[in-house]
Structure formats: C-alpha cells, structure tokens
Length: 167
Image 1: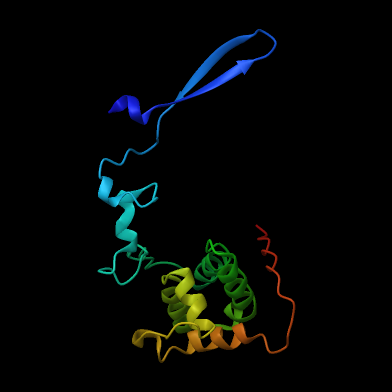
Image 2: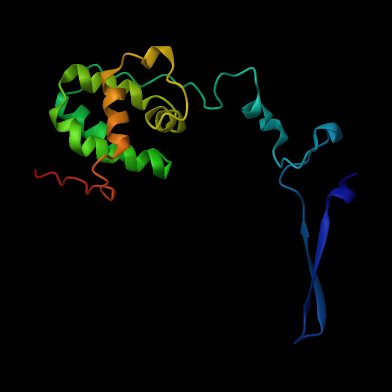
C-alpha cells in the first residue's frame, strides 16, 4: 500500500549522464476511497457541511473592557483594512475613514460587533446580495455601511492611508 502512494520523479542530468530520483509522497493520504472526490483535504469536509449555519468558525470576540475610545477607534480602523478579502477591505476601510471619527461610543460598539461577522456576509449584506439576518435588521451602522457601498458619488475608491501616530 505504501509503495502505491509513492511516486518517483526521475531527473536526468545531461552533463553527467546520470540518473537520480526524488521520492514524492502525498501530503495527505486518503484511505477512504468512497470520499475521494478530488478534494485534497477530505477531513476538512466539515467546512461544506449543511449542518453548520456558516463555514466560518464562531470564535468569541476578545473582551476589551478597559479599552479607551480612541484606542477602539484605531483598532477598528485597522480591523476594517485587514479583513482578508479585498472587496470587504476596500468597503470597510473607506467607510471607517469617513465615519469612525464621528462615531460615539455606542456606534463604535455596534461597528465592533459587526466586524465580528464573516467578511463575505458583511459584503453581501451591504450590497444586498444576501438577506440581512434578524439580529442586524435594525442596525443603523449596517445601514450606513450599505449606503456607503452604493457609492452614489461614483468615486474611484482606494485603500486610505494609515494615520501616523506622533508620540
């Protein structure tokens, strides 16, 4: 069984007229022939499960009880830029640049909770590609993000520059 999973790659060196080989073995060996559908990581099939509401892990937010308002504003600005998905990065970073300086403490808290949601969900809710769940139906902040996503002024959006802190 092990022999069948090892592949040999022969390299011919024309200068020395010699042969050498490298043994390559698969990174993950799937012993379950029934589940072999081309997925190189079949044990991660849970990500495709219909039993889960979302394919994203539900990690609890990090509590920050003593965070100052200005530090929260800075953190949210950074988290708006570094989401991992370019579309959401662009949408939220330009939103944060425009609106976070004017947000009060409650709005900052609501925006912080919104950023705990998966990137694609935020993007799809803001662009009306996916229905907004009940818990966000009355959110004024999500409503503002949705308005911002319309880009009615037809501006060419780019990632805003980061603020340089002076000590």
